[in-house]
Image (cartoon, rainbow, N blue to C red; front, side, top):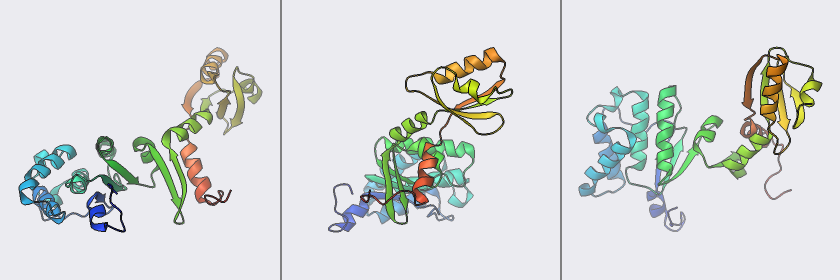
Length: 251
């Protein structure tokens, strides 16, 4: 971690890590400034360097205007920001965030995700989460662990490509016979999901979505939804964690 062996030099390796657990390690009766100064002291930061470290952490986490407020009086979103600030107060090489947006409202989630992406530009960031939409929003690389084993280590871009290959979902108020959809230019396969929805997979290089939308307009099919089939990550997670995949190196 940060060039330090976790076995041979554990203190230096651990000093290179900033950690935010799911249950925030906050003291509600301290102000934000008091708490962050305390956290800096735990990282053995010299007193002369703490004021600058506090300023930078609060600046990055949007806490400039709440430094004097008691943590217990802050909203959940600002408490989450304070938790992230303690994780970066010592400018670590690696930041580990466990469920960083749990319990937040939609506006707070957007703000925290933006902060995490910003941190990822200058730090290594490891996000642990069961919310797969979080993975798609934040991560460049996906690792799936099940029963203590690493089941997947793959760039997000390749999973995104798998989503594209999964085709798209089309919803029609007056759908034609399935054969009419199968006969559209570039269509490789059609799966009927319910009375009005179909998953359509196109051949490589074909603009099947445009052909479908054009045919729907001409045929009066009542097109009201056309979206990518983005379930590749979910499907991969379920397949691997249900035990359908052999352990790495076994086949």
